[in-house]
Length: 164
Image (cartoon, rainbow, N blue to C red; front, side):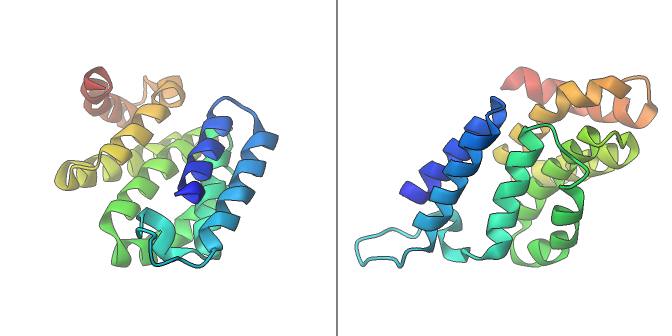
């Protein structure tokens, strides 16, 4: 439980732009998540898959929230195939994160493609987490609101943002 709480704190610090606090919380999260389970522990969320990929995904998420994209795409993109085969929900959330990473990196075509993929999948799966990630991408996507592909994304995302 403490590891997942620290992970959320790392994300929160990144969202408010405090990179150092985010990295410290992420280090604590991975330390807690790497500890062996006790009999009384519940198996919660990512606790079942603690490894370097998990750390890379958490770190990439913090980087996205800090406004980065260029260094995040090469970390997340190659993991999509394995994520898709192991967890459609996690892959959908990762597509949503990639949409924002591409937008942060100034690549609207790729951002639109990933956002539409995430939107389609999140509608099928009912993934609120993916929709939440996509809502976070809205301010960055608005830079290219005159592009047809981005307009298509914004038309689908705007009602979701209003429902939040």
